[in-house]
Structures are given as structure tokens and as C-alpha cells.
Length: 154
Image 1: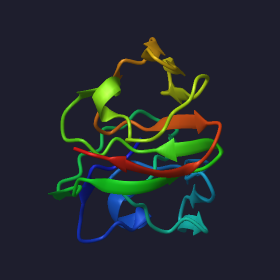
Image 2: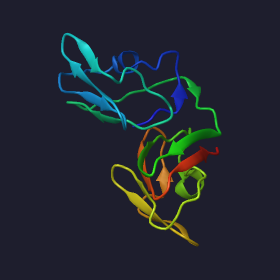
Image 3: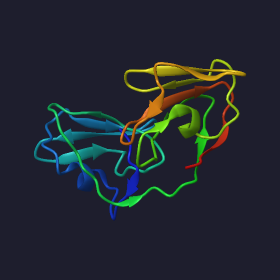
Image 4: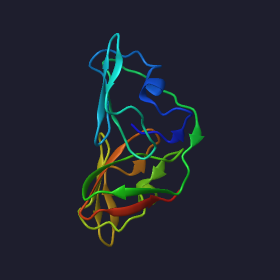
């Protein structure tokens, strides 16, 4: 999942506290995590979230989460690491991957993945695969051969 709005508090307890949580539920970023414990709350290094990355969330039950706030300001600069980077969808509506992917010098073999679809970049052609649209609220993994600065243009 990812966030495409800024709220007064991006604290995990504030945002996820509206859900029915159970011990064993967790939130992970690319580099940190927090676990939920009944009677205690969240425990871990990840204490807040941002609009700059995606999160893997494991819940013991189904949940719907609505977050109201100020839309993410675009253009939004990010850094793509060599290898895999967890990306958000900063857009307020679905956008085609060919125009929604961050502006970057992609090379053949670079990949975009969602939880259930993927696309690969081909020089001279662009993105090809089952992932065609970036959806608000969803997160994506992108793999690039050479990292660098990128921009969600908006």
C-alpha cells in the first residue's frame, strides 16, 4: 500500500489505529518495520509513514482504510536504488504506467511490479507486461540496473 495524501500525523498508531488489529499484524517499509502487540500497540523502528515509499502490510483480518488529507505535491523527487526500490503511487487517480512511472533513464530489463502484475522495460518500445496502470493506494517495486534521481511528474 502507499499514501497519496499528507495528514496532520503520519504516525502509524494514528493512521492504523482505526483498524481492528491483532498481535502478529505488521507494517514494513523497504528498510524498517513495526509489529502490533495486543495490549501494547506498535513496537518497532517504523513509527511513521511517508508519501515517498510503499509499505507491505499484514493484517489478520480484512480491513478498509480511508485517509483524508492534502494531496501529495507533484512533481515529487525520489531516488531509485540500483536493484529494487519500493515506490508509492502519488497520484489521486489511476494513471497509465507509460506516463505515471517516475521520469528516469530506464534501460532494457528494468521492471515494475505490483502485488499481482509486472512490466518490463524495452529500449525503443517502453513498458510491456501485465502491469499497465498505477493505482492510488497501491505500492510498487521497481528494479533498475543503475540507480539515480527520478521524478513523479504529475
